[in-house]
Length: 257
Image (cartoon, rainbow, N blue to C red):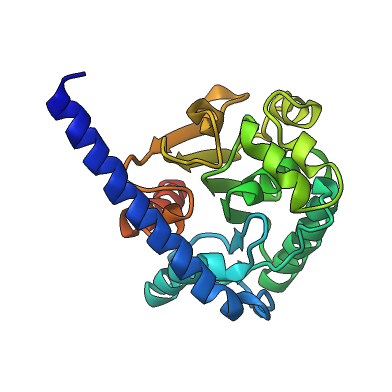
């Protein structure tokens, strides 16, 4: 790499780092807004709603519904209906317990909205528990589309740092090549379900980069979208990323009508 290219690359990394620090600062300031969220009341889902199915927004580790403050605001402004959030603890370190909480939330949404399926948007580890729910066990067939942001679909070597952040086996379960990750990838998605992984190669929490790639069977049910100007937290607040998430769900809905 020439000196000029190295300088340009260095400037790009500096700009990205500044944006990511800004995203973390925003997340910290918004956090209190999510402490008592996750109790939205639903209603029978209108046939003519812009979103064909109810939408559930699932946060990641040591976060809460405030993670999706900007996305939910955009959805509300554009007339999306039955958009839910979930507030669950991650400190116990049990992925299966988190899946159980998610399962109860999904059943409540289906009951309130009189719907057969929902769509999920999930950040980071939230994508792992959402994929587990829709792939293994009683959740099969209840989720039509899962769009993940910065989710380590193939695990992450950075999970070692979770040892001091939660109890349980979370750090080993999320490790690249773990039994949990291999088991999840070994189960095919239900017919008609789809997973879209939105990721960035500059995600320091999901390393190496290839671990963000979602793959499995059937192959056509997986899609990967890369953004190169944001970091892990920045995925939650970048307008281009959020517009892509909404287009993915709206596009699928329009194709099915």
